[in-house]
Length: 152
Image (cartoon, rainbow, N blue to C red; front, side):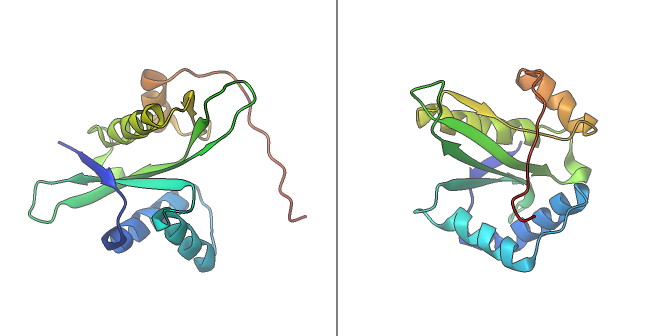
């Protein structure tokens, strides 16, 4: 059984290991300063971004196997906020056991309790393992994602 709980300061090392795995999966690099900033934002109650960890409590300490980060923002099509599930990662050797689904459900429950109109997220089109789960728990809207970096 997977246990989901809010991110806490004591989770830093486990989170960092998973964060690095997440970046590696997407073949991305993030400066250490940004990683530190992200971690600090996740723990700052004044900053509107949240995180949770997935653990398998089969040992005395439990093993942390995944994380999720999310934020909310106002919407033009709804009186309620939209909840953006920004990052979701489950350790590769534990995928398929329900941690991803449990992390998504945690965000869904949180968003509902906080008055959000919907939860949405993005993934890479080649991420077939994750997409198989997402197709079971959400609706593929058909929208295509574009972005424009502003550091150019």
